[in-house]
Amino acid sequence: MEDRTSATPDAPPGWLASADGDRNVGPAERLGSAAGGSLLLLWGLRHGGLLGDLAAAAAAGLLWRAATGNCPVKRAVTASPLERRIAQEQGWISAAAATYAIAIDRPREEIYRFWRDFSNLPRFMHHIVSIEVINDHRSRWTVKAPFGKTVEWIAHVVDDIPNERIAWEAEATADIPNHGWVEFRDAPDGTGTVVRAMIAYQPPLGQAGRVAARLSRENPARQMAEDLRQLKRYLEAGAAALPAGEAQPASA
Image 1 (cartoon, rainbow, N blue to C red):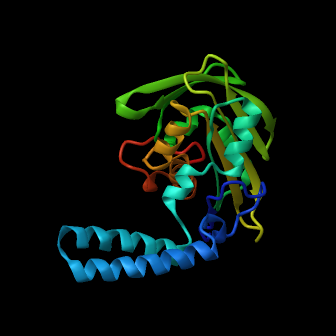
Image 2 (image 1 turned 90 degrees about the horizontal axis):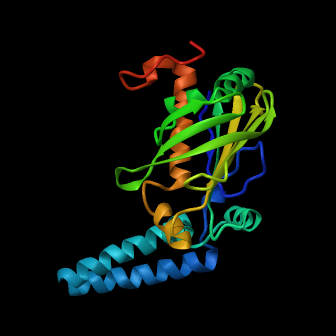
């Protein structure tokens, strides 16, 4: 099956969004970036030396911004509509959140069943150290944190529609308040399943923590994209797609 993915801030549930949703620089800003980048590049080439090299590097960033319509720094500093809404609803100082969708060539009943057993999640979510299933609705999560630390919380299922949707949230004692959901829809072409997930948490240090996470490997959008791509490989190709030592897929 063709790998169709999206990582847009707030796309309609159950649908794969256009790649244009990743752009966060408007036409006027792109034009300004192109003009500024060109002038800065010419200045750097004329002057040379360390300052010239720095100017050329900055010019490359502006020209890339103009060409792609994407600015990682602007994205990191500016909260998405989804993040603003979640922070308001949860009463958080700030929120880090992301959605991502991917098409997987497996029946949605199978993918739902695999995900619903939360002990399977560490098989493809590499930031999760372990998940201990306490009962059908509660589980203890241990997750990697920066500087070699770990954080823990107990999550409970708040919504469970078989073969369609699972939602969970951390209990009040969580080190980091968070919640998430995953939805399963038949792919538009009638083959396989579109899996769309959302994760949100309150970053330590508030807005500064959110920006730091966006600019680092802790970026929730990057983590979610990597996790769902790994899930796709795991379910479609089985153990052959996994690093040595990984357990066999539950569907094998």
